[in-house]
Length: 178
Length: 192
Image (cartoon, rainbow over all chains, first blue to last red; front, side, top):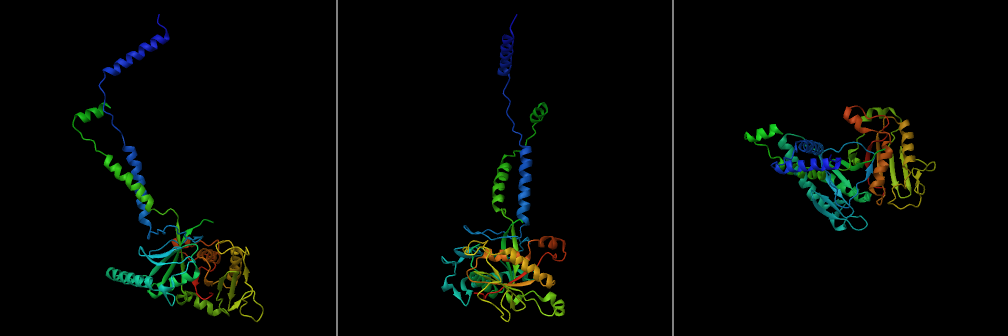
């Protein structure tokens, strides 16, 4: 009489033989469920992206101030004021010195001349586009400052925006809970 | 399995989803990068000439004197001025340059220490004034040239009130809640 080990070995050998004789089946990867998950993620991300009226992308090294304000950002033209420079329409317009002040050569009676030129140009474009659409142009500027931005520099930027016919000012902040 | 085999034998073609998957997997990091990580919010401010106090004109007429609240953020604390008089200044004096209305919470702290100002005391003062002038919503804020933006935004938070929730009112189209104190800031240069 065969022992249990011998029976097990015999059964194993039989199975091995059966496997050897069987033709190999091509493996089919079922990725339908993975596709479902990925599709849901993509739709969610696209929806989140689509609902932002304006995309704020602070420049490198810039720390946007924190605030308890909860009002959402509305459409407008962003001005990025970092520790080193002022960026408008994806162009670095003016350099700030080590103390955070604007280069005196670029200032004239609190007006930042290179920034004014570009903002006035953008305002004209905006007005033309609004006119073509039959809408009223809203000169809203979003000030994306750094936590260390000096009040004097902020006021100069606001003054310049005002001269370029922008009449609504919004400070962009990071929403802080509590 | 038998059914699938049968179908394949019949010549049915299965859709090749691998290229679609590739595109999808590239889209995910691209959209994640474009997405806002932090929640941005807005604080609307006005320059002096666009002061938005017009809506309360009639109600203001009934009051004896307008509040005309002004906050000066100085390096040594806040100077609070109401109805043309600095609060805490000696009698008969409009302003007192030697002494702030609300001194620093952390005296001697550097300017980049944003907790140096006594925001709680400022909010308490704003609440006190709001109780006297219920319809007032406008505050003029000025600061010394060196004051950083973080201190300015926290000052505006304190003046707006820590319990103020504008978003709910904006979404439902209701009036601004009573918890909101002075939520229309005017930024004024000149404390220099």
